[in-house]
Amino acid sequence: MFLEKNVPLQPYNTFGIAAKAQALVRVRSEGDLLAVLADPEFAALPRQILGGGSNIVLTGDVKALVLKIEVPGMRLARETDKHWVIEAGAGEDWHALVAWTLDNAYPGLENMALIPGTVGASPVQNIGAYGVELQDRFDSLDAMDLLTGELFSLNAAQCGFSYRDSVFKHASGGPDGLGLAGRAVILRVRFALPKRWKAELGYLDLERKMAETGIHNPDARQIFDWVVAIRRAKLP
Image (cartoon, rainbow, N blue to C red; front, side, top):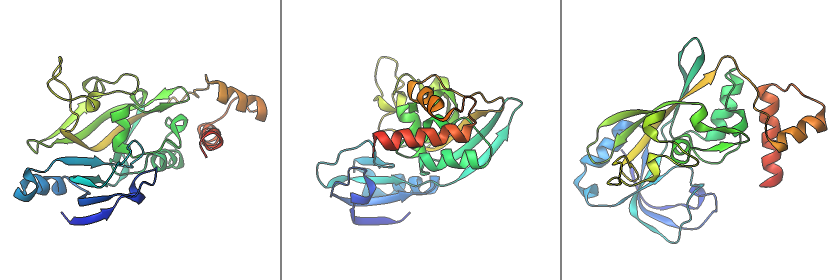
């Protein structure tokens, strides 16, 4: 574990807001988190988890201990008869993962190209775009309990996905007792990508692209390119 002090956060939030973290730890492995939990200096400090900074608005310097999630890695974890199961570290850039899957001939995430943020944040929000949601491609994830230091895994049902929602957005102690907000840090996420791939084109913007280009049976790379072009035109 390496602790940094008075770290400018402007490069780490998409609004580019000028603010500083009084203390920041770059989490690149389970060991970094365990070191934080074992250090008495940090025991009483509140903690702020930071991924890609695309869903936060900083209103001033951050006094909480910032856990900057930078767990790396992208790999084929396993195969089944129906799926390639891809594993990615929580610190990887989401769009970079989508591009990597296509570069390696694993289609299925192309409709979610250019969504800002990191892989670790994707299950929290149950991200989605152009007819595909993360829960449609989700296999499982690994996380750590910040109270006990225990590692655990969750499948899709345990994540409680709904529209832009999951157990990671709800505090514990609710009616179902399943909330993990502020308690768990996601370390790795696995995606089940279909070997019998089928284009998801039931979205007006994609239908327009088919009409404009005359391409009515696009492959995954073509859909990726269309989605990137559409998003860049709408969100320069």
